[in-house]
Length: 270
Image 1 (cartoon, helix red, strand yellow):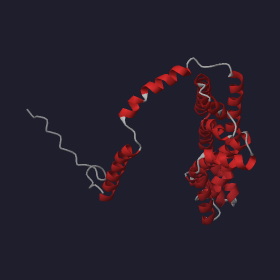
Image 2 (cartoon, one colour; image 1 turned 90 degrees about the vertical axis):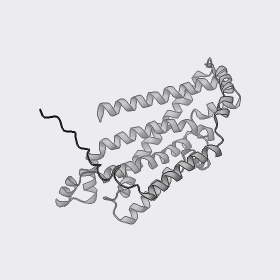
Image 3 (cartoon, one colour; image 1 turned 180 degrees about the vertical axis):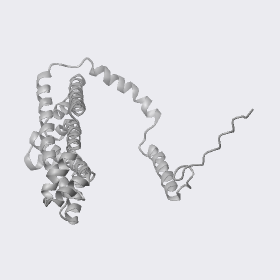
Image 4 (cartoon, one colour; image 1 turned 180 degrees about the horizontal axis):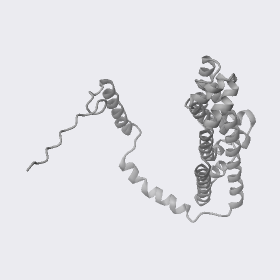
């Protein structure tokens, strides 16, 4: 009676474990791990410090509850202003991101130098933190929500324009080549063949930008750029931790509502 022959061991596919380890990749990995280990000591983070901070955290939480509802109405008005800043700043940022993405796209920029220039500008917008932009616009236009809105607009351009450009570069070339063969201009190709393909990606990215802007707009008030941030700063400065708790919970509800609405829109329409 024949017995089942043992299954021969499969050879390791190339490019995975069977491939020799790249010395450069190994050296970079070791350097990265060493950097993280050294950084743990440099930042002063230890289990002893964390455990010693436990009683202070417990006292803070005890002072925060129950939340103080005496200033609920002005806090809600400031929270509404915060969302207005996020909505208007995101809308303006998305509006300006579209033409900038066209100029930054490898396939659709009129000249390589134009693409490099717009890529650099978008990277600059994305690199500078929104809090710094808020400080710049507070100096330029004064205190208030206008400065915060402009800061969110610039931050949104840095976020959206990059992903818009990448989505346009990944669009199918077939419809674009067909329109070009029919004599369509560069603008006609972008409007007629590219935008219809990438519109779902544009909408999804814009909704993510709104979520990001809602969270970012909370802290802009710390530098006088309007919104709920100034209320939170004043409460913390005066050690009104129960009022600060109410403000934090209000912010949490707003951010959660925006994220849920954004997720529902993406699920329902995309």
